[in-house]
Length: 162
Image (cartoon, rainbow, N blue to C red; front, side, top):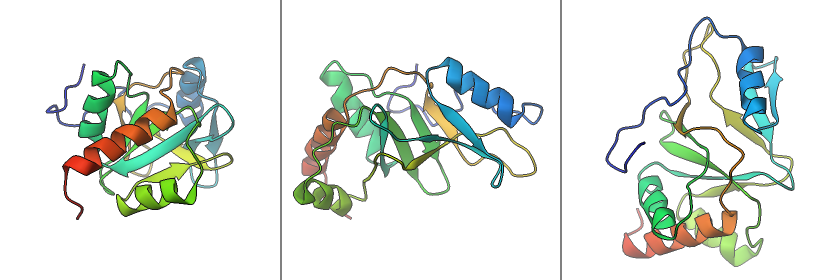
């Protein structure tokens, strides 16, 4: 289990020998309706009425994970994109869709993937090096997006904006 001080590490190793289709099948066995986009040789899942995502800065993410844990909630499947310094947390899409909510998230460099949006998943190495890995293993157990947003707001109140 990772703690907030644990450096990001691959939960599910990404290898040269694994195919896109094999990894996609694995994600499907975890309850994630993954698809392969052959044009970009990447694996995605489409946000829908049961699945969304919150993308937040990697500096804020461990604090948010701790707040959720203190509330008795799991962080949910979480992927990291080290090059951009962001984590993607898969959530149940129950986020209040008001301008005020989205403006507050935008000011904290947080974005929400809503219905129809693509959520990029870690993909096996091929001719390209891996640029995403799992922080929390893929599963179909998703925290409410509203709880993740609430935790972000609480953490943001405690730390100054950039």
